[in-house]
Image (cartoon, rainbow, N blue to C red; front, side, top):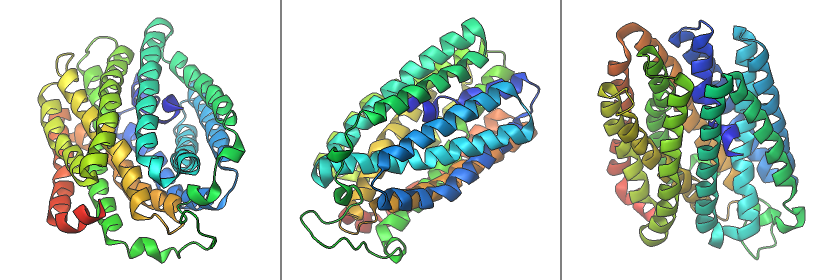
Length: 381
């Protein structure tokens, strides 16, 4: 499933650039998809909380992604490409809470941190394989092969999720109800607005992803503009390096959370972005790809474990874990969805180097929030 969520995005920019698109328009298309996903994450979380057919939503998401890949392959019309990104974003908004709900339902709250750590390690390993195959196929057969590969992964994801026996998923545990309780009534939605640690977490993630969202696509475009070898191979390398690091950091985050809590894990993730932006500004080359993407792996790898784990922990007993995940993803997505458009137009106006520094600076907002409310957050973490 990993390639469905992260494998296409960076290649999409290169694919459209080769068909005559400018960076501003490419960023706008990505933003349209991001906004659609952002709008759908809370409803998707509510559906996952309510449904007893969580596997079904993963299957539908995979089907959407397959169709989206076919649309991009057949046409590069602005509106059709935009529709494909909307379909992919809607699918992605359901996949996250669905996998978290399925995991909670199988291992319960006690085993969630550890199992989510393993899930994310496998997720990143899948991205390594997907990106490596994409780079090879893109080099050998051209960019269309990358989108065909994504559709194949979609079919395999459908088969995989259907192998999970439905009876192994405890629907009460999957939505974060008290274990051993008999009352199936969940807390009201206002619990999300009254939970201060959850609101601070969402705000910090919004700042981070406002800078981070455009970093990798623009780094690929900068390399293409500087003629750094084969574009698809370069982008594949950026993904592989980051995802290999994420495998290790996912497992590290799991152990750090068990021993020290989530606060330090997330602080380190926020600190990685300003440094990454500074390096990307001066190292858009095959040498710079290593430190830039190692830092990406540190930030994203730590967050992939800490964010779902912290939300599940904060909202345990409310029965609103998955809608809480969706709410955090919405605010997080608000930053990520505007990032490509902001970054794309800045890059078109004043160049890539300055853009990377501006994008990295957004994480300063995350760091200030996280340290200012440290006492409240450390108790919750």
